[in-house]
Length: 178
Image 1 (tube, rainbow, N blue to C red):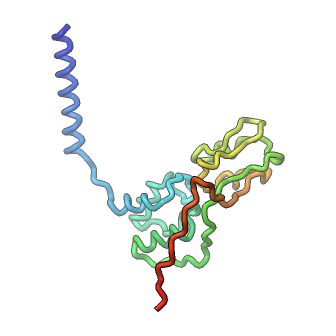
Image 2 (spheres, helix red, strand yellow; image 1 turned 90 degrees about the vertical axis):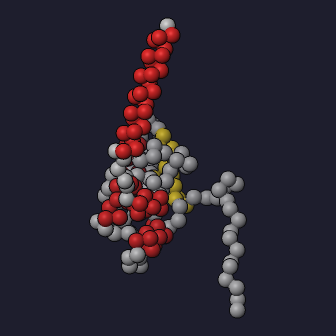
Image 3 (cartoon, rainbow, N blue to C red; image 1 turned 90 degrees about the horizontal axis):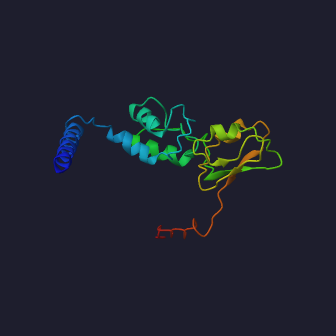
């Protein structure tokens, strides 16, 4: 019994050590700019920019394949942050900054077609086929994908209201009058 435990312990140590050495010597260095850009992106992975997720979009931005105004959930604020980070000029006059929004489903218009369920990247919509749907506000990122696919127009985007958990005291004005 003790020999079997010693063999398993030795085998586990050898395999674990081999994996550790392989991870150290065979690691692939990532693009540090892409990692910083990914930290700025909202992380909804909604695909509205044409890429499969925010990490792929960050790689595309770092390589210069797409413009800084590619993220609808991020809005004008994110586009200006990305332009500053990348050091590029961007015409943001056509963009509007709508602030954080969340989906709302009018229950009397919802037919239960489940098109919105299939398209929601964060699974924020709950419901079943031919039954009324609802939205989990804490999970909704406001990517507006569900609003586009709803055939009855039952989904609309509403501004996020402040609650006791999300309200913060406004920052003071630091500009001193001279």
